[in-house]
Length: 281
Figure 1 (cartoon, rainbow, N blue to C red):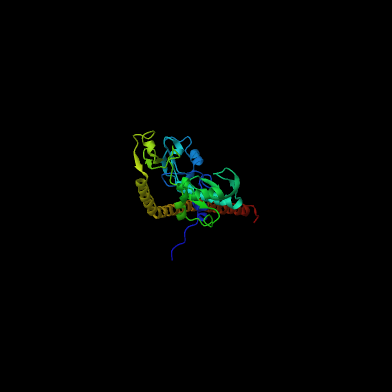
Figure 2: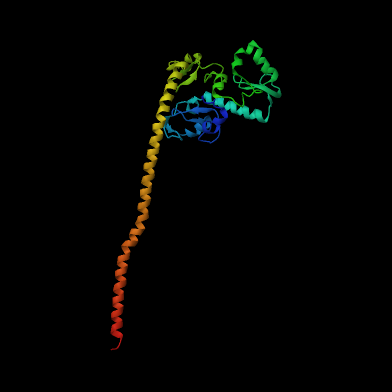
């Protein structure tokens, strides 16, 4: 029997928590070790660090990019997941919000991942049937249906918008700049700020990243086993030290017992001799 699709609500605690602030991720940034941190938390982590820093979770050494925390890759997929969870929670408690289209505060009907905002009934219908915003249709979510409550990772993949250029936010990221730690950029950036840098197409880099993720995933069981062995050795060493420390006082006590016993016997003999001399015959 095939496994049921994963609902996004199941990921909240174990997948979407920042290990630095212990809260839900905000603007998640991805380190080379594949651990994620909030953008503001990453600023704190690398503050006053020169050249390199260590991941607080796995202690792997990472290089500090010239542009600081903002240069690290944004995890667009996780950001979309967080966005879905947040809009689901907000809609549960209050469905009256400002509409992105007409700017009126009214009951909302849908959410557009391209506009990244809520839509009222009228503006939602406009998105559905007007060719002016035809490119928005694949990114619409109907809040009146069960999609919000049972949104799966597969469904989210179709809804989420493609990554945007880090500098020109209105342009799609068609390239990644390897010189700037695979920063997502558009074609215009190649002839501007990133001229002369090593760049790759998004599809090519995605295939390479997928291969890297698979390799790291296959290495994970070996890493877990190594950590278990190291922990077992460490526990055994600490146990041996504790036993040795526990035996030291008992050894000292045993070392003093024979000497004290001899002293008491000698004192007893001397006392009996004195008594025998003082007793009249």
